[in-house]
Length: 193
Image (cartoon, rainbow, N blue to C red; front, side):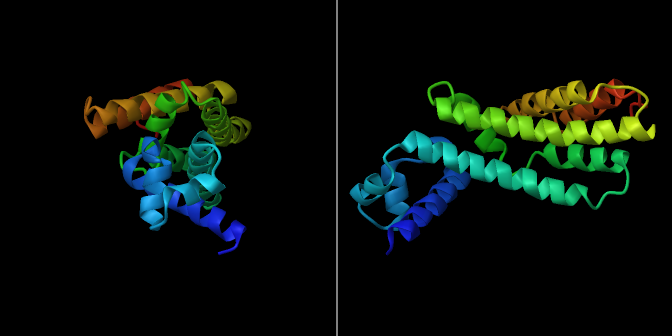
C-alpha cells in the first residue's frame, strides 16, 4: 500500500473507532487492531495520537456543519432555517454528540483538539448568526443580536447535550429549553420554534 493510501486508511479507521467507541478510544493499538496490522505500522505513519484525535474530530464535526449548511439551503425563510437548525442540532441521536463530549474532556490536555473545537464552534455559530442576521434584515425576527443568539444557541445545545449524557431531564424538556430561550432572544412567541 502506498504511504498516502495507508494514511487515509488510518484516518478512516480512527473515525470508525471514534464513532463507535469515542475519541478517547483512538489509540495506536485500537486502530491497528481494527485494521488488522501491527501497532508499529500505525505508529510509523502517525507520530502523534493527539493530532490523529484532533483530525478525526475536526473531520466529523466539519462534515456535519457542511451537511447542515446544504440542508439549510432548502429552507425558504430564516424562520424555517432556524427551526431546521435547532431541530437537527438539538436531536439527542446526533452522530457527533458523543464526540463533542469527548472533545470537551480531552481538550484539557490536547491543545490542538481545543483549537479544533473552538474553530468548529465558531463555524456552527456562524451558521446560526447568518440565519439570525437574515431574519433581522427581513423583519422575521423582531429582535436579537445575531452573534449573541448564535452564542446562546450553541451554549444551550452544548449544555443540553451534556444533560442528555447523564439522562438529566427528558428529551422534550431539553428541546423546549433551547427553543423557548432562542425564541425569546429573537422576540418571538415561545412556540415559534
